[in-house]
Image 1 (cartoon, rainbow, N blue to C red):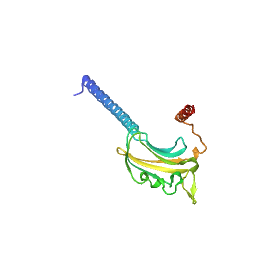
Image 2: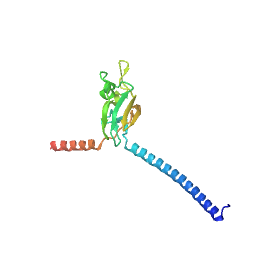
Image 3: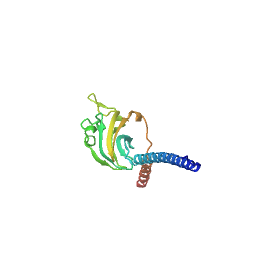
Image 4: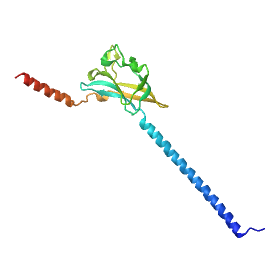
Length: 193
């Protein structure tokens, strides 16, 4: 028996519909995969945005005392922090107590909250790069290594500290110091009357 023209047309239409459905399924799958990649990327960005951000660097106070400041500038706490120094640093050129032997550089810190900071005074500018008995007690360059965790991620960061770049630099006086000086002068005038 030969196929009727209507049957041939029906088979052709069914074949075309099957092909269109297959193409539609293929493109739907591709769109689904692309959306999944976008969602994964957004999740990574959110995780990076929320993670702790540890920074280690020098700061100077109004009296030009250099300090080593460790901060968590991120919005989440850092856990199981360990810090290490590559060289001995003896604060204020006192060669009896190296910063390297301080507990923060020898024992893990269970948690450093978001926004928390630790400050360690190093030395005045004139004591930086100082030697005692042929031993450099306040090196101008050293490295701090920090390791910490957030969720299931581990971070290992290196912070080279170079204090040479601050030599011969100046710092403007704070407004509070100027205001206190004005108050002192005013009180002096009152007491001399």
